[in-house]
Image: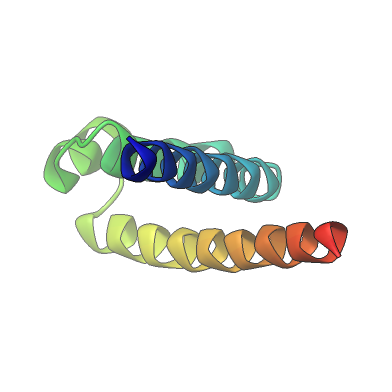
Length: 88
């Protein structure tokens, strides 16, 4: 039971970090680029279909994903540091 509770708390904390980071990044990027990252990562739509649906080249889809995932990782680290600072 304790392992399950810890795993649940850890999962909820990761979700919180991702949502907080996503909010920071989404506010700073073009809506179409955000839609592309959402479609490919959250909705799981294949890149070729997203490219066709949005009229964007496959190469550009990969470029957008790479840039935004980097920004999301950086935002997660910022949120984690902020939380660490607040807990001290």
